[in-house]
Length: 113
Image (cartoon, rainbow, N blue to C red; front, side):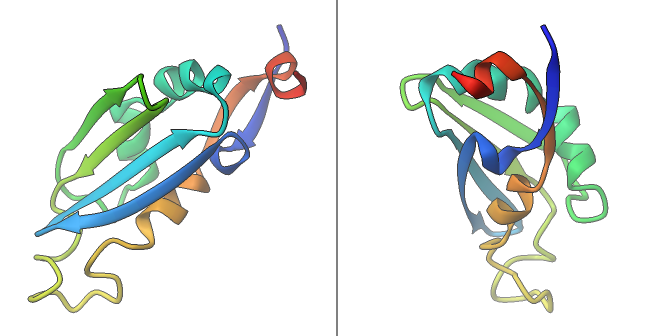
């Protein structure tokens, strides 16, 4: 099967926020057929690489197959959190948009169906 490089936004939605110094990013498949692609492509290592220079700690991944979603915790990302950080986005609200810019590989047949 031929694969195509696409931005995550083509197959998923995202929502993000914070818990202290950790960013929280939920990624939800636009259709249930895309969930296996998210599980395959959005590995801890791939997400850590995508947020290089932003996420200075570990990345945790939680699978929510009943929702067709993955949840990521990006530790040591927000400069201490909303009340102590000098970052423009100390609550991590833009992390979801940043995640959706990530490029992944998807089977062309799956994109056309």
